[in-house]
Length: 116
Length: 114
Figure: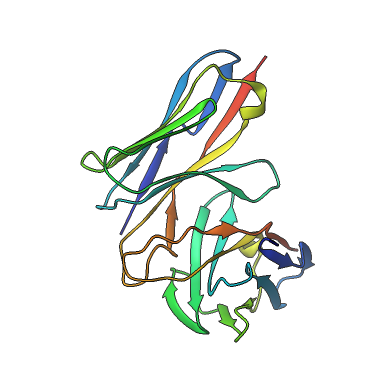
């Protein structure tokens, strides 16, 4: 069974540009969550999508956005990049999110974004 | 707002020694996760603790959860070099939708010295 895949694995952009990252969940998984990891702020939750709807959102500015497609693949977009957006972006997928039910999250390898 | 604190942040251990990493969280939750991260790599799930008093062991690692004290521990027994990594605990708040929004601790960078 294939794991969570993320593309690209590495990306270099300059300030002011925008970037789109992609995440393909494990087959059958309908929930995709995104996290940002930086040395200064650690691992922070960005947002989560389920059945093409954003259900949870972290405390990030509106420059960070995402979407999910009908096949559960997800993309996140960062517009007007800043130096501080340099980070490892991780996505995680889980089977489904039901109230009170535990669903293990499986993390992808991440996309390393460098903003110059 | 849920806060998750880990200590210590850095830990250097000699091979063969025992030590414990602590994870405190600020809001009631009965789901606690431990992850391992090697440099430049993603997160590897180690343990999932879903109830008060839960204890899980895998090899030289043992994790426990005390929901009343809002405390989890990751105990390392007779450390070996292969355990060198950064360890994170994470907590989620019971919500309408499950556990897809994790709040992570700061991480503990563990270095095992021969």
